Amino acid sequence: MRSARSRVGQKGEIIAAAELGKLGYLIIDSNYRTRYGEIDLIARDGEYIVFVEVRSLTNTAYCRPIETINQRKITRIMYAAQHYITSKGFEDCAVRFDVVEVEHIKGSTPIVTITRDAFS
Image 1 (cartoon, helix red, strand yellow):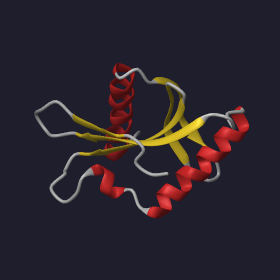
Image 2: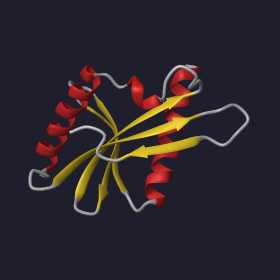
Image 3: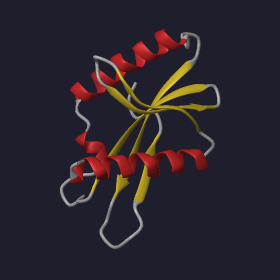
């Protein structure tokens, strides 16, 4: 049985993928796991391969979802992205790291914020 936190995260990833699709992103992979870490979504956006970190919160009184990403997490995402690029043959592609924030406010539609090129 999944924890409440896990369910919120999974729901956030589904919402994020739908929102990115509306903007023309083509989702090519999800939950890509390596020994370095996991990348939530991987997409094509024009010439870019985009590695997407999805952050979902049910309480944003103390911080925004993007503020929960620390330097250690960024480093792990970058290593995992490098592994993906090498293993899939995307060495010649432009790369970008986006963050999708999903705020699950009780009784209302989730609020989605997309930050392009959040870190490099």
